Amino acid sequence: MKIIQAADYQGMCRKAANILSAQVILFPNSVLGLATGSTPLGVYQQLAEWYRKGDIDFSRVKTVNLDEYRGLAPTHEQSYRNYMNVNFFDKVNIVKENTNTPDGLATDTEAECARYEALISSLGGVDLQLLGIGHNGHIGFNEPDEAFDKITHCVKLNQRTLEANARFFSSMDDVPKYAYSMGIKTIMQARKILLVVNGGDKADILHAALTGPVTPRVPGSILQLHPDVTVVADEKALARFDLV
Ligand code: PGA
Image (cartoon, rainbow, N blue to C red; front, top):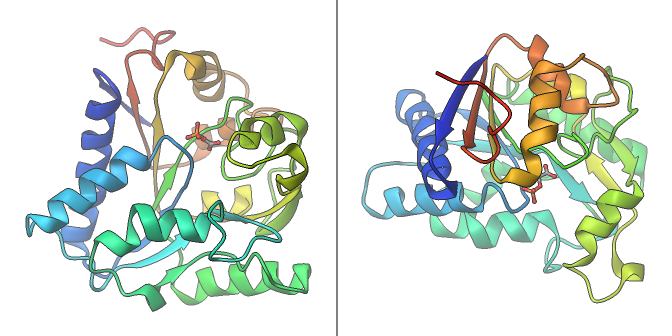
């Protein structure tokens, strides 16, 4: 595992965008696994800026997103499909048909999980998976205590995650209670993983995930067992590490 420290959020975003950019330049038909949340926003912004300058071509890239709320239409402002369109896909020359998220409106939950997992396989798997980590250690929506061997599944979101999401919805009742998520097993099958983390509020969980016991109670701890993980984090998130 490589840990790369950036001075601040902006620096973290630029370094992570550089890694994604190098992947796309070296392998223009890469399958990128993408993440939502507040952490990667600046990474997408940076990539879009380099695209506008003519430095990156996304025309052959394919993407699969980690997760999507069950019950939200792709056009819902808070759906992850909408987040990806607004923050990234609409700003670069990616072919929309080559971008994938679980279908929040699927009527058959199990069939949707199976479809998504099969889709990832049919693309040949993920070349580079971008990840954030939640305050409780979740990656994707794999909450603490999930077994490690899950593939794409439908998750009942825990109280802490619901509360963290509440700020995006008009009332707690509107916050989706379930989400589709790639499982830990799906994530671990990605050839390379790029974890981005910023802020002092993530310092404890980042330290626990990368140096503590590998346990489903800290889902991100599984990354210790992946052969090709790069962590790009700011100084505050790395406050508990002794880096030289
Ligand atoms: P955040 O979420 O980037 O909004 O902090 C990270 C995550 O929950 O994976």
